[in-house]
Image (tube, rainbow, N blue to C red; front, side, top):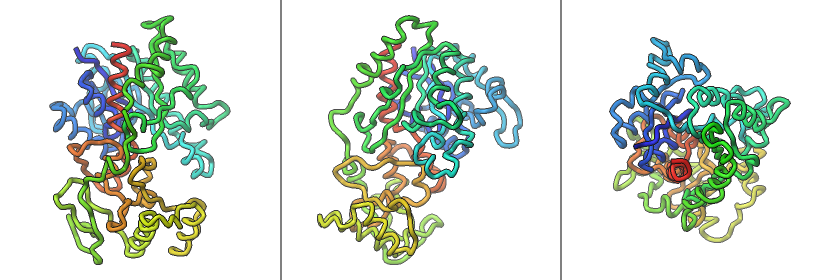
Length: 405
């Protein structure tokens, strides 16, 4: 008997894919409001997991419109029609688990630094309220709420987000860990080749677990989940070192209607096409890559990188724009922001002199090569950066099953 789950703020399905890979779960529904991630998730469920009614299960809708989400809607100009969550859950008999996490940009420290108001006016601060409403309506035995560590210090109003979340879940009958610093998980411990930490909040329904809630919560974080840690850290080389090289052409060509500056992969690998790079940037990348390869390390300090940026572009930046991945370390964080330029994700090989491809970003996020992504580069880098790494999601799914089922 499989465990029934729904995925909220599902994106292109990093969490869903890991839960499917575990073999223990049945995804009743996945909710996401952006079109490109929805289309990719539907294709993935159909082609990989043989979900023949993925068109019905993947619901593209605004989570803030919870009444319609529950009851269904018809002929919406943006979102079409759906029978709604109530009907899908009724068809499956019961709901055991809710997984997901609201968009993290409003809670991230980087986002608060970039925004002149520190994200205090960002509507995304309160999307957790929609998550709460869904949990409250269906009362699953447990939920998993994923977000950035920055949420622990986020305070858009007079009350911290953590206090609002804790109070909200308590009011609907759920217990979460008292000290959420203990819920910060370093994904490199679970084989993810990328420095990525996230808050993973497990909530338990007190009506079901009663006085055992606290013990079970501590058991989950201290014993059950750590059981799935990897034996060693995974590096950039482990993740992308076997992909075919993409080398500067010295001129521009056209492939699939788009301008390219680098060769195509041989043998061909889906989503492994280099972004177009200007000759100036190719020169900068080569300089930075050779600096590390040679051991000179002239350009590894923040000040040196900022100075180089000004020399090459004539512009001034408060943060250093360039970062070369290191072969023998995990990569830096793969963010949604990667869709803008990729300058902080420069490939380590000086012969290639480029930023990372969509496939390389996907591998650093532990998406398997049989997950083929469809859409523009902007859409793909963004959805991959927003995703939960499927490898960690699989560990999480197994640990949750071990603890509760």
